[in-house]
Length: 194
Image (cartoon, rainbow, N blue to C red; front, top):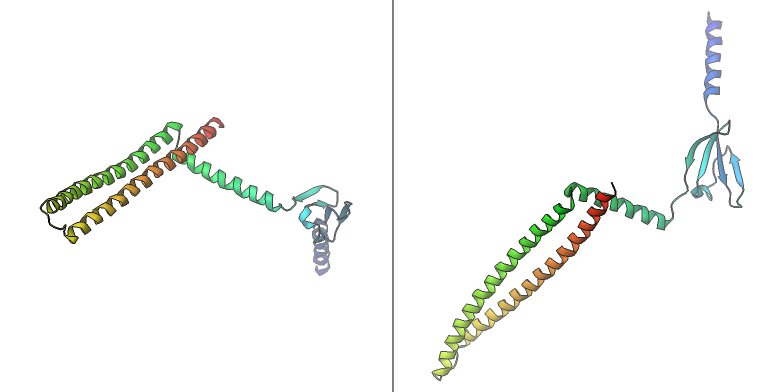
């Protein structure tokens, strides 16, 4: 009985050994010569890519060459653009969605501008009242109190700040228009490419 099992075990091991595929590596060496080797691919040419072939000469696996830094950069840019495109199509189903989103954003900024302009009007009214007081002092031949002059100067400074804020919001509106124009163009392209 033992001999029979030993014989079966020997056949099993022999079958496993023959089932284990032999792999060869086909690559082009530094001299431009195609080499087939069982030893592997030398480190100085491994970045050029190679093929793994079986004992019958069939390609089992292809290992592509390594990317150049420029190709790697371009691949990263393509992946980033694909992610941006995916997000755009998730946000906007049609071009009119982009237009409505821009209108909402512009209206939001317009409301901030309107608020700042109301503040400017309030400051101008306050300053006008203070200037009248200063004028009354001068007409009466009195010196304008330093405290009154300081309040007028503070209001003028606040007005300049608010005017700069309006300019900043106006630039934000321009930036929004440019950003949404790009989004609109890209969404149009993506929808037409389907």
